[in-house]
Length: 196
Image (tube, rainbow, N blue to C red):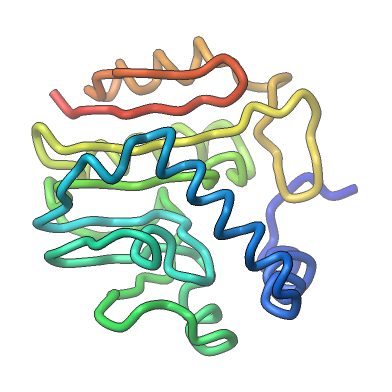
């Protein structure tokens, strides 16, 4: 088993299968509806600049929420997603980059979504660098919606798991990089964070 994330795995073993199977598409959509409910996303208005990091082939939150203003999808497979599946909504800018490598200006984002993304980091250093870059891009008083499943064991494409990172460590990373935590859940690290 290769627990490191690679592009070929994500495209061929996940997204190609999802796109070919209406039942899997429905399952994917239902899962996002759960995230919407957990974060109470319908109670927010999203204006200004919104970035979805690792949003996937459907365009992440931009496919599910009425977001106004500038919309940016950053994903290391963004170009492939657009060319291969063409499901990213019109008006969404795409950046082909890992979270740690997104090269946008400081303090650009009013809102950042990073849902089920950083568990794909291939090292703890990459994980921390990603949080540093999120903090850099997020405006003061900006909102971060973050979700990270903490698996009990490593699985294919998922290096980050309970054995190499803890909820406490994640909590400290965010505090160290000026993200105020508002909520998290025992089974999965959910977070609504606000930058100091």
